[in-house]
Image (cartoon, rainbow, N blue to C red; front, side, top):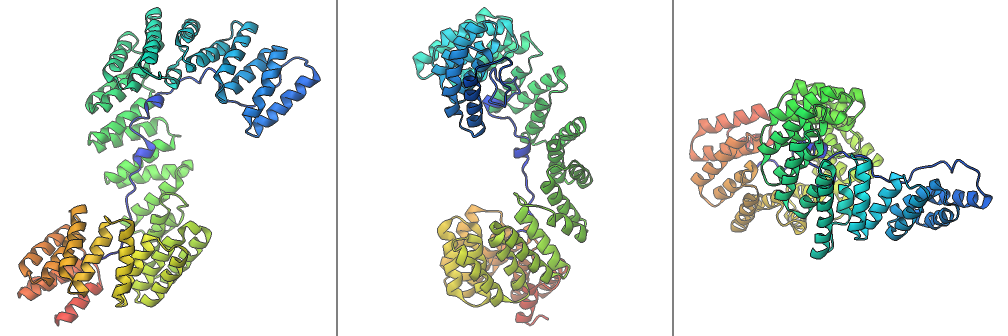
Length: 574
């Protein structure tokens, strides 16, 4: 079996967090602000007012500042009724909206319209309150008036706020949308709201038909292109979605959301080079946007365009954005280029976040490689003190350093102490279990590994460790094979598990089958433990020269490998 240590550097593929293919239906386009904005600080009405009104409003604003909008509403509502002041009415209506009181919103908005019949905000608030209560026809009259006065008003979010409770309710809602489309044939907003509702209902064909009609009649309506592309993507027509988005970009060269979606779709289509170029162009066109630089850096990194990745990561440092990501990947690039000191600086600059543990592991490995094991242990202790949530990971890394240097008992004691505070941590249990093998404490090994499997019976690493160790240390070979085969079903292309299967074949006396399996594992990964196993089997087969060649190759890639050297000593091959 190959070494049990976990990989120390894992390429973090997080483009989904940076450039999600498309946002959910209710947020896939950028729209104007809602008719009534969320509560924000306001000035008091610009006219004299009674002292009692002033005191009430000051009290209400203090409640709003204390996040007690529900308590502020009745105060504002009372003053709105008494004063009929349009500013107070607007604030009271906003409070009713954010506290989800539709009936009170309706009453306040109607009074507001009596005071100021021309107010679009008041009419929008009234339409929203009516719609959310299921009064679609009445809301539709207000929406029609709003669209005639302000044709660019979008209201698909309102439509989705109350999409219909049952079939009869949905039929009434659809009738209102149909009426708006017929009454305003030249206004794409009404048609787009209906398309959005169809999409939300899962009627993709009707939604797409409305989008195509908008694109044909009003090529400048960007939202229709974005929704149409989303609908195509939902049906698996990725290339068609790209084509729609490219048409959108022709009409709107600055439509960065469309260009970003094209790049994300290129990834889905298996075109990472095209996606990389798309994100680079986006980054160059919007140089202050760190998200685009990070997306390009990740793609360039994945595509092994190291110089280009480095340039974008350094741009992030200059912008002061995504610093953890920038340092983490620059550390990986410097490690690949054998610039160990520079890599160490980058890894240690990574703060708490998704990459923190991997960065600390990489920094630890570099310090050990540079002969700084004591400094690595001290750094891990300081990091665990500063970040208690990292304490268990730090204990595992510290125990790895100690065990590598042969201090098994000290490493196990460190894990014992940490397990006292974190008794069910699978990484701690696994590490102590593997140390127990070195200490010839098979009962402790088996207890710890079975505790890991009790939490996750399909953990291939633990299954493989249990199977290999039982094959190596006991005569429970059939049981060992069962664990290894279970692990192999979970991860059939894992060289370490294939090596373990070969080793159990050898222990069961099947030399040729064992050589075949371990040769397969060696072809997949020139791990020094696999090399030690393959060399031993070739030696036992009588193929001495081939065995020595495999061992020498293993030692070139892993100088001083204890697996190879111990195997050669045991077989008298030195």
